Amino acid sequence: MITCQFPMTALTRGLASKGAGVKDVPWAVLFPLECMLWFEKRFLSAKLYSLLLQRGGGIAGPCLQILDFTLRGQRLKLWDPHCLHFKAKAVSAIMNSENDELKKTVTGQNASIQARLKEVTSALPMATAWEHLWKEGVTPWDVKGVTPVISHLLQENKIREGLALVPGCGSGYDVVAMASPTRRVIGLDISKTVVELARERAALSPNSEFIEIQNADFFTYAPPVKFDVIFDYTFFCAMKPSLRPEWAKKMAELLASDGELITLMFPVGDYEGGPPYAVSLEAYMKVLQPWAFKVLSVDDNIPSVPPRKGFESLVRWAKMTANF
Image 1 (cartoon, rainbow, N blue to C red):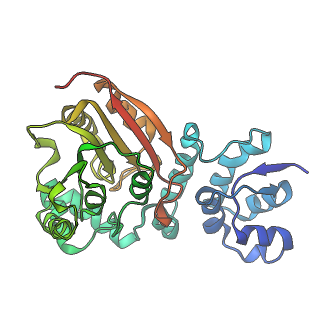
Image 2: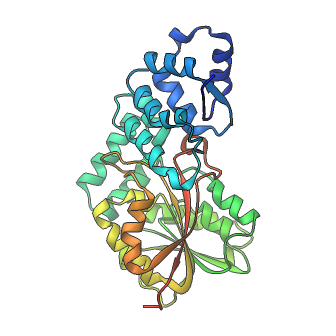
Image 3: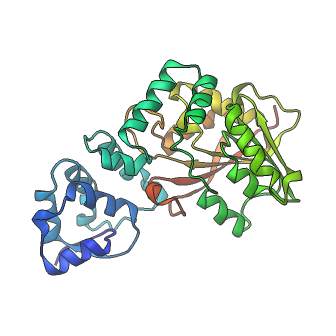
């Protein structure tokens, strides 16, 4: 039997073994996401693969075609960091489809929230737009807790000590989690409303003396010190792609010569529009390499909040030049 190796959930395995109810299952919604989001190692028969391809028009077709290379014996792991472009194609197919449930799975946003984000960020200057959205409560990027990968890195003692910066810190969960007697953390946000919320949260922390929340524009921020580590998440993807070169320039200015930039890339894809705007390793490299940043590691198999699982990648960078 010809097989292809990629993830399957209990639903897919059950149907595969029983062969029942296939015509009633909305494969256009379920199957591509199962392939992309859950990392169980199982085998799918070529017969079932063909059946799904026939019945899963729309979005399922492109996603299954992306996975078709596995039938040619390449046995590629979907979480291999060198193969992000395959998932990027899947995300692109999802975001360009008419299925709002799929888009919501990728971005965490329903159609009305996405429309409101576009309306506000298109009509207002950046500072005004994000303040307006925080006041309005239109904040789908806010996971209302510590980013899972930050919790994991802290548990593994894999975030360097010293002075840390979290631009676009939002509610401040990650700032508070990262702060310690050996790591002072500055959270930066352009919205006065969320800065107040973050300050209230920081004040309750036993490490509050090692936390500072500042209301400032990242692009004009000029502290008297350099940072040992900078963490970027849902910040790069929030800005228009035209601002990315300035983002990279500022990162180079703010980071110490031996410092580390940690980027949690989301959402990995190549669809049009935003926010959130699609990101990719290539997009980061394009703007960071001119400032002599080099990739230290890429990890695509990381803890994530459930809707974002499979659409995030952790990339760590070193700056190879002297301080500015």
